[in-house]
Length: 305
Image 1 (cartoon, rainbow, N blue to C red):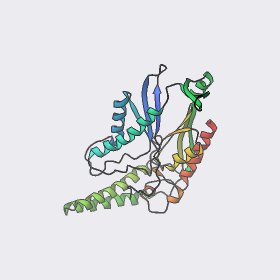
Image 2 (image 1 turned 180 degrees about the vertical axis):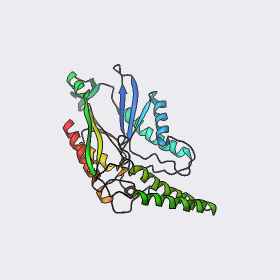
Image 3 (image 1 turned 60 degrees about the vertical axis):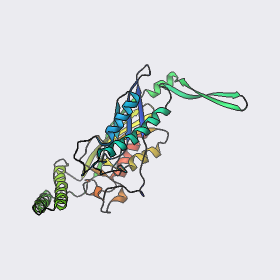
Image 4 (image 1 turned 45 degrees about the vertical axis):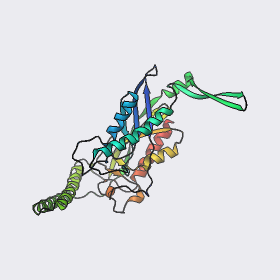
């Protein structure tokens, strides 16, 4: 099952980027956070931006600037309050994230400054004095670096299911769903239709898979001054971002997986395979692929730094 597990580790890191013009005027705010937008689910009948919508509204209301949401590595992360039918829960989750982002914005110093140590002042105690000062030219040049590129790593595929078997499975579930409807069993009809949809998705995924036993997985790594911006495809588990941040603790890392190939589905850790987890079922990748991706990205980050 996919749901709230209070005993599992979860990355709650929020990364906030403030964008200003040359005069220090606020232009936009970017919030990078990892969480499935699944506050609302089968009990909801509305089209909704889920928590990201209320988050953007709250930040724009408070700052007057547009807000961009960048999803993080959330293959195993979802809202604590999830699968609801009332849109107010989505708004509540959005405000929760917005307040964390606004607190981060409030802690930032003025644009184009660093917090610098000025020296001691002898008073009732000897005081160490700091203040915000304009960055030096060499520091400004370093902070303006923008470089990087798109890369790939070959990943082993799982054995592919047979299209004929998937088609037969889809038709069987569709037939059972229709039969349940005729009997008035709406719950069974819903469940069988969902299982038919899983088979249908696999059939569509097969159309995009390459021949052979490996998949060329693309990702990008760019340096933005003091920060690193990573994008990739699929739905990697949050350990991808926590591992990168632990390896490069002095560097702000923004990671967003909504880029590149989505047909790979989930990238889960090696030790999660073979446990009957839902995330293994739609994934096209063999065990160990998330670890390979992590190493490939880390090598590129290290080269840029």
